Image (cartoon, rainbow, N blue to C red):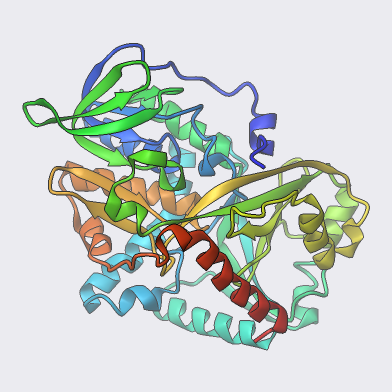
Length: 429
């Protein structure tokens, strides 16, 4: 179920980029025209590198244009998992790299005058006491490192100014996170990248990488129709959408998950005031979490059903509607404007997997549902490593990532494991 997202529908007049018509040579070739690849291209082009971005379809039709639009701080895992693998000085570098993600979004929206409905305010919502304990630990850890955007909300009375739901026992209100229309943001970055000299090629699927290339230190990306791009450096930025061109050290450490989102028809101003009066985005603390926000057109954008099995995928509209109305019974009669799905790449530890081969193929993958802001920062980190400052990249690429077990049985094994976590969520263990 891979229908067009609401962002594509409302942004039908978005710019289109040319298809690669002939062979092309550049300094850096980037596979993937999403937020990671376009961010890397922008940074490189502004530093004077010749860059080509190759996207199989229109840019943003993968995860970058199919997500919930949540703009979140930090990495996609508890930072303690990163910290345990690093010396204290390197842990500080990793922390600062993760915390730069939202600042980068804000900076670029302002610098390039990108109209993407960027709004700040976020609720990390607790469904029961264990969740609240986890949020207390998060607040203590983050504030010890200087983060000053949290307000603890304990109990229904504290929550009622922020959310009109009885589903939660508390939350952290976070003024450092927020939400936006991600496809508009992506196109704003792409416009800035092309103004800086980057070439963006749509409908130009990469079919293979020839690492011997044409000699002279150039590798070759083979494109459908006999075309090719020659480059000294290649970046693989397609995450869960790389298909057959991912390297073995990447594909064994990444699992694909299908996540789904619905958009209601526009709600009345009165209803919006009842359910999310401050305009904050919300995510709960379950492993199989719900996440939602009200967009600029007063639609509820609600995501939450993740499929860890490709064996029995079905229409997800009833399940998403049930999840939404469990949180907000007042939306029982809300009309549904659109429902869509998309792939998320996850790693075993939920930490993004950075890497580089000996012959200058750079990659990053596995944002694990936390990528709207973080992908841009990761793309910048790849670009900075090429430009000459690999400090953050080297720290993150030093982290160990386990191979997913199961081989050909990986998908059912992952589905079985997630069934346990979903049961744990339901039992509030």
